[in-house]
Image (cartoon, rainbow, N blue to C red; front, side, top):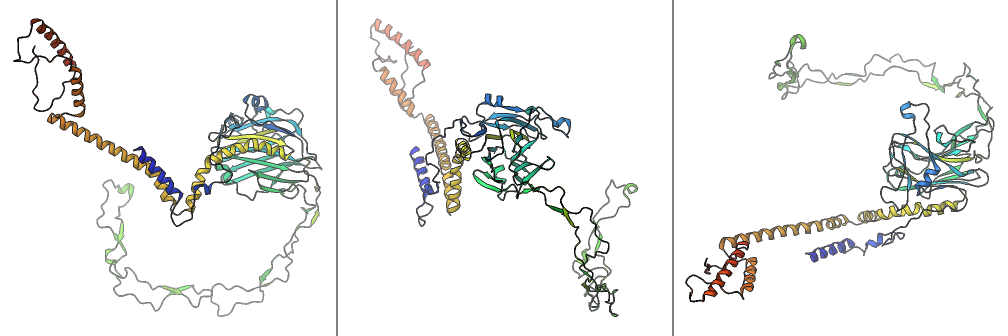
Length: 579
């Protein structure tokens, strides 16, 4: 049986390699990516050590270090009900729920529909001088995302900053990361710009990415988000090393960093004689004398004739003669009972019933209401616009990169999905440092996830390319099940046959295999023993031999009471021992 099963499985696998004899030779290895090894070894993860120009780095692998560095907010959100104002969302240090690396931990938002805030100070403040800012971290929406964000805030450096009071009102310099609600998928890049004239700050929002973002929220995989801002005011945003948004701080934000130099005069008013009508009705036109505005659009067809057999006296609907008034009908409460109406059976064979009316047709004399034709307006002056004046609030900031210093990083979130995992946060000014950090953390994590999912993807692509793939796949799945069912059925049949043979042997007193073995064992064990005397045998034995034989008979009798009685062949005379 094992040989049959093994042969069937090998045959099935060989069929899956070649779909048909006419196609080119195609093996499963053709679909393997070059970057995916055929026999992948276990991916070993070790907590990375930050190297180079780093302002902040966090891998969350050591819970004790996390508790010492990060501060959960104890504040309350302003402007909402007291019962939901507290930042009571739960944070935990955990690994991925599936496809996680051994020893790789992350910061997980465990609560949903709750405000949650947590923050940590940078190792040293980041100052916007002549080096780029690089912010990088990875996020895994393990349960997808219905509504909520997974963005981070780079908090503005302040004297006496209290992270335990971190709220949505805490000043920040940059907000960056994914956000979603419904079908609105976003990847925020917002920075606070300082007005050089009055010192006030205002939010500047980057334009929307041109790439679709919905897959990042629902595929359950880790994704690496990177923001790079350069001293020349350019920026780029990438997801998994692919740039999805780029531009300049001066041109690709709304509202723009620099206000317009001129604005509409708010005090200017449109003159009363200003005519904006491009066309007007011709004042010299007159309605023709034969224009009758009272003619209807449709009239009855005078040439129509009532069809023969039309039943003028028969109504189209009649009361149902089989209907009966309900027993609980109360005419004082329900009114006079009337039977429901049904189609008149007499009208089924007739061309029509009731009063005949000629069909309507278009009225050839109909012209409608007369209106004067339109002509160009000789007084047209165009669309009025207020005059332009210099903008009193105008300023020109040519270096918006010079933002407020960053002193801390925080997550201030509200989400309708839980188990959002944040990991491998780094803030640096060196691209090679961020790439090396990702190579030692995110790349290993993503390689494990992709490797585990690669086989299913390769099978799907192969099945899409091969015409007989679904049939082969069905055979591959059904063959082991079919063989197993066949094996069970054969076993049941054999058991029934054995039971039937045993029953027949018992009925006919035939010897069966077990009985023959028992009889042979008894014969082998009793060859050396004396055969007990039977009734009618010679009684001239000695007295001492008779006594010894009687003792042996008693011992044999006791053993035979406990042992099953052997079956003897038909026709064999049974011997009875003397008492």
